[in-house]
Image 1 (tube, rainbow, N blue to C red):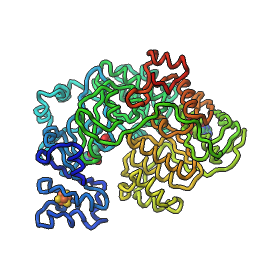
Image 2 (cartoon, helix red, strand yellow):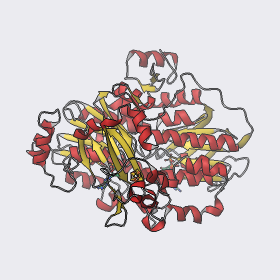
Image 3 (cartoon, rainbow, N blue to C red):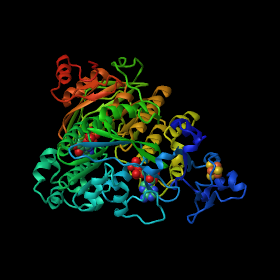
Image 4 (cartoon, rainbow, N blue to C red):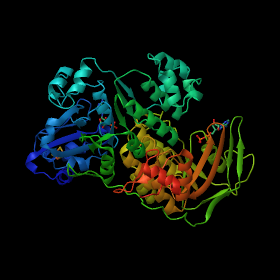
Length: 606
Ligand code: ADP
Ligand code: ADP
Ligand code: SF4
């Protein structure tokens, strides 16, 4: 039972419990159910009004009358209700609540000048809400959902706390905040014209040359915004935030669509900015979060119901806590641990080849791709790493027979199921309708339902229209549909985009299981090193000059491939002693020099 789970989780006595009831409005479908919540609630049956129907036709649950039996939670066919017991002491830390039975946020991250502060947590746990409050875009109501909220009340509430000065300066107009939003796909609808013209208009302090050089933007300056790739749009969004003269900068998921070279470059620029500004970063690529932040606030709780912000912890300690799923000071286990391999994994699996290719060459007017000969084996997941615009998609299209190589041969035609990098969710159809219309192309065995659709939690999305899905929800749907098609080779281009770090690990496990159990193969193009590390059995490495010349090599064993790739991008990783997770070495540090010397760029414990 939900409440009992939380009693156990927090280990406190029943007396000190406050009960919260959350109705997830985007899941609740009163027209498609028989109002099971009301029908079966024992309190309603005895005649009181524990659950009534609200103005929008959806249930409204009284937290005062509810006895926490959890029957409505189990009976709701759409998993739209959460009843949770929390320590009563938390009540005084409630910062914001989105209406009755709406999401609650407890505590806030604290910005600090001269530090880069990270926020780490799953999706729908309140990260954007916290950013909106700290940047002055949302006045918190402290749970007073029917009354007035104002900045005066905010100042009164935070008097004497660490965060008071931040709000004082914000309210007095002494600090200016800039936010790089999470989603960047909509930028072409708002900003029109050439990149350089748009940035010039924003540049009130002569920072254009600095930002162009820092973010390597020379080649995109003359492009029209409507023609930019996802990675270029991300760089534009980051540069548009950095070019403004502000005191505080928020970067909500700055790494999506960027290759690892670009991620590291953005991270270094954010670090430079944070030397004399306040900077807050939300990021799910843990290697990058680890690299860029000084301190991290973990946000834990229940998706859509409540989120609790922890105190700031040093970055290494915070990420280790997060991946272990356990908060020591708070004595709270909030999820399963993620495990990393300390030593190089086994050599490539020795199974039958799926497809073998000779040296392939493909020429376009301005780009030439060469791929050295190689073999993809049945039952193996091949990670594909390399910069953007280096020919990875072109290679895949040759494998799928969509385009023909100018030189070289592929030994047979294979069936490829493809998930593109950029996803379009512009349809009013529901997820259930999309699954139904593609059903004849999907395998609908028990294995597929359990290991793909249930594992990726698609069930809870079924009634939503595709256009209303968040980036992470759309990504999970696209991965599920790709894996459920009958194919020899699954190709997933950047499946980690918009997924939180736990969802990334889950998606990685799903891909591995489908490939292993069904004896198929997969090529996974991704830039999150932790994700590539956990999902891949082998690695293909692309290198060259983006947009001009690409060279693809492999597949290699993960050990050999990682060393080659990291040598190309000039970065070494050591292993964290406690969790064995990879950590980027500071350039020219003892470990960095030592690892370069022995040629061990990735698997080094000492
Ligand atoms: P995150 O950034 O961690 O993904 P958000 O802060 O965006 O989380 O959202 C946390 C929860 O609050 C989600 O369940 C979301 O649906 C809900 N929420 C966000 N904005 C609103 C709003 N304006 N009204 C009602 N609920 C909201
Ligand atoms: P990646 O998948 O590594 O990002 P792509 O294979 O999509 O790279 O593209 C590599 C380069 O080839 C890019 O510069 C792209 O503009 C160019 N390119 C891809 N397809 C074509 C085409 N059909 N005609 C001309 N140029 C193309
Ligand atoms: Fe009713 Fe509360 Fe039980 Fe739900 S948990 S059925 S609202 S008493």
